[in-house]
Length: 166
Ligand code: FE2
Ligand code: FE2
Ligand code: FE2
Picture 1 (tube, rainbow, N blue to C red):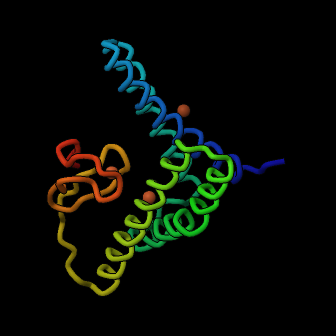
Picture 2 (tube, rainbow, N blue to C red):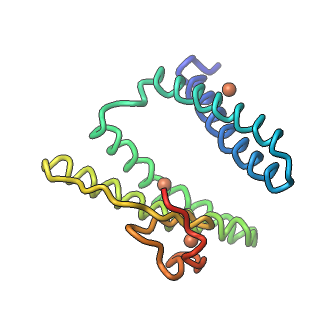
């Protein structure tokens, strides 16, 4: 029987998924020229973010930035060293081409996330100044380019003019 800690973990995962799913559905509704329905999805998505954040906070999963960076590094390391290599191997065994691309692209970007977080943690620990930079994100694989979009995504070859600034 799962205890409350288990349930908080499950609820955090479920609410986080609902948030991203509803945002994807909202985008689709906009593409289908249904702005009112898109708004319904976006309103619900915002509520799911509130729920997810409440569950994570209740779990004690939001700490100071040094600890949060360490948590992020651990998560990215697990994904890049264990989870995605296993998922990719299974997708290759099953000849699931779409999953191979989806897992493969994500794995490469997680490696970059891991290094970004590690660099930030090293600088924070050393008391060095951390300069704020602009990021341009590949809409296909999530690759984060620094300062400006590249001509083509180095991971998935998407043209740079499709990147969006965050
Ligand atoms: Fe919810
Ligand atoms: Fe990541
Ligand atoms: Fe990309």
